[in-house]
Amino acid sequence: MVETSNLESLASSIQAVASPFRGYLQDLYEQYKGVMDGAVADYIPELAIAKPESFGICVATVDGQVFEVGDCTSLFTIQSISKAFVYGLALEDHGREYVNSKVSVEPTGEAFNAIVLDEKTNRPYNPMVNAGAIATTDMIKGKGSTERLKRILDMFKRYTGRELDINVPVFLSERATGNRNRAIAYLMLNFDMITNRIDETLDLYFQQCSILVNSRDLAMMAATLANNGVNPITQERAIDGRYVQDVISVMLTCGMYDYSGEWTYRVGIPAKSGVGGGITAVVPGRIGIGTFSPPLDEKGNSVRGIKVCEDLAKDFGLHLFNGAKPDRDLEEWMNGRPADGAW
Amino acid sequence: MPKVVSVHSYRGGTGKSNFTANLATTIAMTGKRVGVIDTDLPSPGIHSLFCLEPEQTTKTLNSYLWGDCEIQDAAYNISSNVGITDAGELFLVPASVRADDIAKILKDGYDVKLLNDGFRKLVKGLELDYLFIDTHPGLSKETFLSIAISHILILILRPDKQDYQGTAVTVDVARQLKVRNLMLAVNKVHSLLNGDALRQRIEETYSESVAGLFPLSEDMVQLASEGVFCVKYQDHPISQEFRKVAQKIIEAN
Image 1 (tube, rainbow over the protein chains, first blue to last red):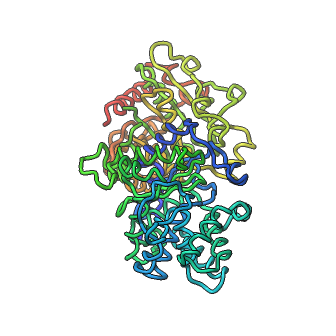
Image 2: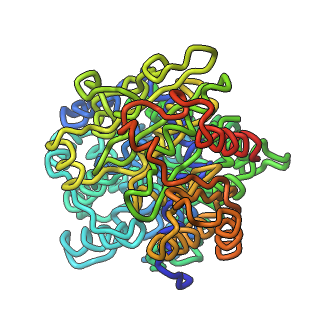
Image 3: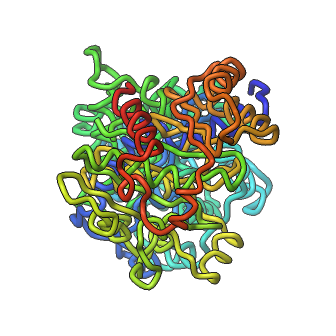
């Protein structure tokens, strides 16, 4: 990071609070906080206690500017969002060829917990469905369960810039009710797609889903991917730059469960959602978006989170394949004089 | 488009609240919808100029910052208190004068993001043409924020050395925060000083324009913070000077 004087850095933090872009986010927050559609995930009691009114939006830029509105500090479990990042770690551990031989990258159109493998190759369809994520978790290197878990937590620390913890009741509950995932694992073991340390791998899988994050963390994780794998604030590398494109592409094609096709068409920002209510979305080279709002639509995606991403994509032309001049210029809104924003 | 005007001084005792009250009222009297917000949370006071008693204000800026109410609920229509009879409305968001509330602010601080969001909600909710921010003297995160979001920043200073130096610091900060319009107002000018020479010297020192020069006035002191001077003495030279400053605010881009 460039050295700045105290006055400059304080001025810049105040500019982020008062910038027209934060005002824009605040308006989005106000517009959607009253939306009461969707339902909080309740397949385990620990998730059902989430407050439906919780709502946070955070945007982090590849230069390290952070814009927050609403509740950006409350913690919730990362759930499926971890899958994209653990996939990246598996790629680092084994390389593209090996990982591809065990997990395909085809969208399924099936629900995330479907017990289905590719009929010809017996591979799970992609790393974002449970089957694929269990397979990638199995690949995480380390001596025993403790070291493997530590490597996953260390990786998330590099992405978020802070130590993360696991919500133990959620982990225990996921484990106690995880027979479907156990079935998927045994099916894959049958086809030699995973190793026989099934209990250890499933524990690791349930633990990584139970990591506690907030919307700011999700924005930093996305901004790190957007910044070619380097955390924009700590400047620490979180993932080998070669594999950033792998992670972002499966997010684009498979990240939003069986809504991924429509998501790519309507929003066009590679993203991953989790049933805890989080969404992390990557605009390569520019920003990371993190949203938190527990009520989910029937596909399992956060209702308010989708609306926020849709509006950001539309208003600032953030769709990957957008060629038209957007209504608003993102950099102008972020760096503009606070007084110039919409009052 | 609504305009946000911050009134600030580096040191206390410059007559900042009195200046804010008079300028806001003068502009409201031209038929505008004007809000005043007292962000001087450690030492609130502007409410007494507007004849709003603390007993009447169950909700304050503090209530909003602590999540107890919406900011609009802490806004009081004080047009009739002040004596604005024709078109134009004047609102005040007071700060709490309860010792316990002030202690809480000093102890816990508050989230400047909320303050910023509050300004915007107030402007929208009350459809304000002008929002005046009466700040706490000196420099803090909160004053940085108020300065950063203002269309116009007015710095009040007295003609003395301490104010000159402090104002120089504040002008540096304002430039760093890219303030679009900066105006200086000199208050409590002794009658023996040559006004034009003083104005020229200050403008040369800071390379900023002096919007108004206000004399050290016994007439103003006599009102003793009860009521707004420019309403009670509309033809007084001080009220005329406020009208000149008001015109500059209205014309500023």
